[in-house]
Amino acid sequence: MLLETGYRGLTFDAVATAAGTTRSTLYRWWPTRGSLVLEATAEHLSIERVPDTGNSRDDIRTAIRQLIVAFSDPLTRIVILAAISGLDGDPELAAAFRELFVYPWRASAADALQRGVDRGELPHGSDLGFLLNVIVGTVFQSTITVAEPATQGLEEALVELILGPRRSGAR
Image (cartoon, rainbow, N blue to C red):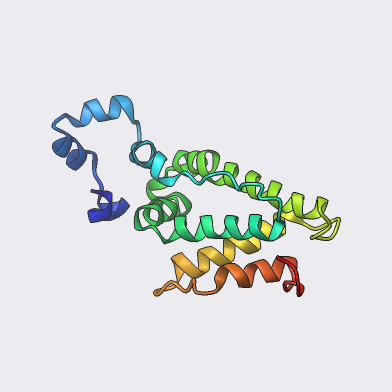
């Protein structure tokens, strides 16, 4: 239903009718539309931890790919835009979205970047928060805010921006 109507068009009345229940029953379990949407889409929105492959270039490429896949998904896009735009004045939606989906992935991706520092592939003192913002902001811009997503070559371009060009003979 969310894919058909978008967040703004999703109502408790419509969900209750489709589920064969009442609006008051839904409100007992989910006090806001945002809480209902987050619970209903939680598994779909989840992004895995960035694995430690033993190679920072591969770790960071994986992190970027995870975002591209997530942000390219129509359902995920609806929930992200609802959460960050403050639709319905639902600050709980934005806070829950950050706690459940944004912060765990960011911590995992920050760990991957820190491994790059520890391996000497990123300079000591690198601003990991800034690098994460560059990754997330670029992928967000390339997949969500533009009319036609532009992801071709994005992974490698971002990896090279962060780690520098691949050295000859390097994997």
